[in-house]
Length: 128
Image (cartoon, rainbow, N blue to C red):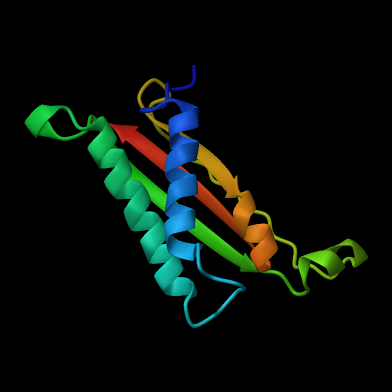
């Protein structure tokens, strides 16, 4: 049995979209010197949103959260990607946990494609 998400999927998607837009909205392309800042901003925005939306009064949320952001640079521009010039990437996660309380969700931000990169977000929760 899979754990129910702490928020509906459409809310998780809205949080992830908003975090990516906030961090990379003005970026035009991949910039190695700024990637760490983008990742930190994405992660912190997601965590702050999750905690705020799921806190239970003064006690805080009923979950612990882990947010992961991966930014991958395209080797070529998006228009040249069809010729096989893009970098490949595969990511997976496994865990031993309580299927009734814990879970994970992943998301690819479509707005990154036009900026010459891919951004993949994952959110993991563990019930307290």
